[in-house]
Image 1 (cartoon, one colour):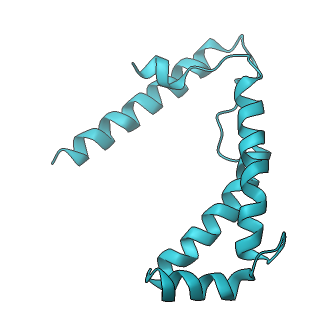
Image 2 (cartoon, helix red, strand yellow):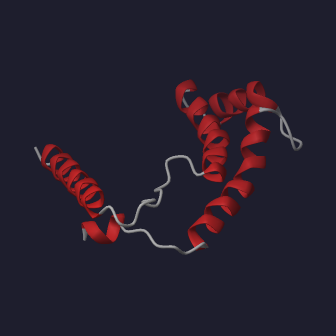
Length: 113
């Protein structure tokens, strides 16, 4: 199961899907954060989310930030899994996989307490 979750391939489909989703999300985030594309900007969006929708200010800020910064992150590939550049370095790939597996095992163990 772990190997399935962390495996990568040479397909361009994930790249295309990630960039397209980021490009679609960016105008919505820019409306909320910057007031671009006919949006009302940060202050008006905060007022709408905290007043009309009655979200706490911290959550409203996270909504705006996630939509704006998240779209940029998707476009540039921030925090996406990169390919192992040197395919011949089997020890490195094995070590990375073992570290991930150990980390996830510890995470599950702590969550089950």
